[in-house]
Length: 343
Image 1 (tube, rainbow, N blue to C red):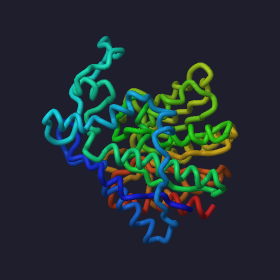
Image 2: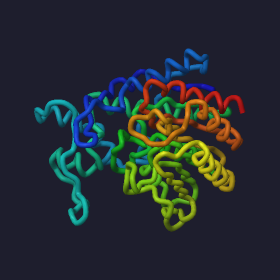
Image 3: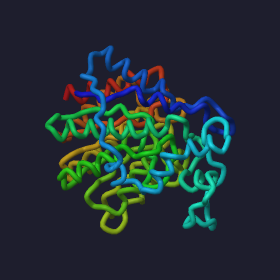
Image 4: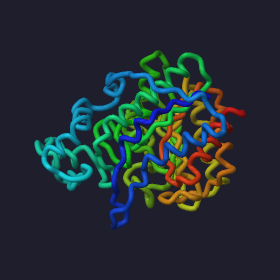
């Protein structure tokens, strides 16, 4: 399986994040991708290829142009105002506050376009996130050209980013951009299978009204788990999209037996949808060792995930999402890819 990767992700390096009442070292760090690529190379997976450049047109098929312009210039504006450190928001338009007027000041726009205080914009964020899109699209192009599957080692992740907001360490939605790209290249239907611990609220939001892209997600129950405000089982889509959104929330402490049943349900939904392609939001923060997640998937079980996805028999684009137990993240990702290849 071809692996698409570059070192540009290292330019996005948040100093800290706000977590459970304290500023702590950012969990979403360059070390994540460095460990993954090192393990994949050690285990002889690959080849490893650099991304091609696709420009901004594909991401503008998914994201609002004003939002993209904000991301492109936010850090330079932050520094021009004499601000230290990374750019973080301080207020949000919640409940009866207005969100139809975009503030002129940077602090207002940071709040308008975000939904948490743990997702910093740094000096290299724009370079890293647009490179991540190129990585994802290059993986998609390899599959379009006949490969059975390809893996895009994107960092930072993307599935929490919606059309015009960021959060959850995500700024541009790589999986959504790839799904739209595959549609634009002629696919009638594309399935997105999200196996990250956290609900892909951004991906759901982008396709919630559409019948041409199925979104199926297995994740921690939002009653107790981030992002808290989307991901419930009764969210089934809207209008033409009704029935094309499948959420499978599971309680904290879920082990393989229950998790794998949810995977089977999600995979059956993908099969019933009969897509031409499958895009996988591959988070490995379901690991029992993950510091910010609460499932109990063991390292030996990650290959089984890859095997079940391969059994769908679809051309597949796998894209890196979460996974914060850096000591085992490489082995967990390698396990999924090896399982896929062995099936």
